[in-house]
Length: 79
Image (spheres, rainbow, N blue to C red):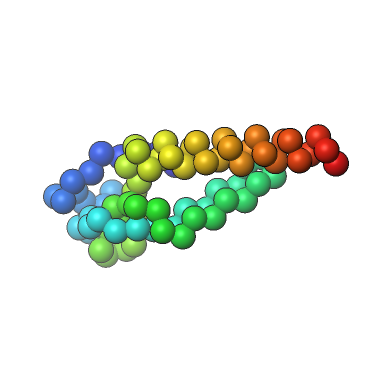
């Protein structure tokens, strides 16, 4: 998951469609954990639907994943 600096004039790197502010899903599998978020703020291509996340959203998701991993490790120790 890469963070991208975007603006209203940005074009999709895949299809060159216009990027619009919106929200998109994010699915991550890591260290035995599956995290699924349905509406993460993002830039969404109006043509192909590709999503790009800005740095603040990427940082928030990374913090969430770190917390989930820590809790999963703690649960594994009690098993």
